[in-house]
Length: 533
Image (cartoon, rainbow, N blue to C red; front, side):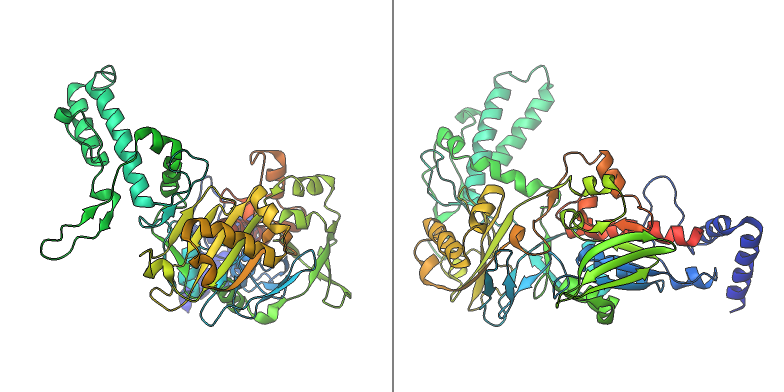
């Protein structure tokens, strides 16, 4: 207590002598407040002591949008005691992070309403569905007590399905088989070129020997005496699994030709595993991705969030901001605050009445929203596990389904829910124009090409979402033509007492990490400003 009193007296003396800015720097040196410095520094959340030690009053902040960025902003500011209020147009938290379960109701922009009929324990993550290890999202899961489980992103026993791709068209290939053939033939070609002296100017003799040894192992190719030939191996899989006694198993064959493998285009799929944000292991919250916004809602305080409150305007006014919004009955309300953080998608924010200037409106209209679609298909039997021995994973296709996801929860249970398509662009727009029943029929008709009639006969329920046709979202994510341009820079700066936040103001667009990171930046900027005032 004596130490705390002495420190407080010291800071008051510094403040009287040098002003608030000097005092705040002193607080930073004592580890009591963030200090802006060159380069990226570890994030420090605002704390109640920041106000207690300075004698400043806590500010009121209105946040527009209870997506991840809006919730995180209120959560972090709340740690210091800011009076935060969130206005959310929908009747749930999370924004694009939402999970459909039995009873979920959603009406799209065309007025078409769906009610999910998933059985107990089954669900569909309508928005984000996986979490990379490097993302700060995992730190929030730990902090908020959100339990995680593995997400099977890449599975050697999953399939690849290509059409219009040479002799292998229309034939589902196991991921492991396709990879073995691509790696094998590439290794064969490179080994032959190396052995024939094509790389002599780039490699020493020792380098060549080491490269050839690597290629033999990497591609499972034969040695020099056999012309470095790729002839397949047990890496491709088995038609009869090895077993007891005399059963050595039967290796899958025959091996397709190099020309057929190249024509199939399957090699383009393997860079997916190398993507920084896509590499295994990945994770998901137990029970559905919306566990994250639900935990944030609880931490912020349900009483601080006004649902079915659609923002209509924001303006800088003397002493702060004024925000206007309409409730579920169409009545308009207005309220004052010290600051406002607009955490909606930019194309939604661009419609707000405001006095922030034409440049802000133009900047908000600059990023282009992408059409994205998903469908969840619940099956009465987990045939992908029982018949195909495929436990989770992503199945890429050249069909208009784009990608299919097999569930990473409920293993060896009775039922399971497959993401029957996760598509973007023109494919998503085409599905989005259809009524839900037509989307489901089209998706199932395509899936039958890969998995046979069981894909239709064992289906029990479905639910689809077109992000670009979902009210107050109207897109899966956005793309900037230039994140070094003036529009991006403008919106990353305070506009009077108004700030903007969202994954679209980060270099990790479409991931929750981007939303959390943007919220942290805004919180730091706002809190630093308050402390230095």
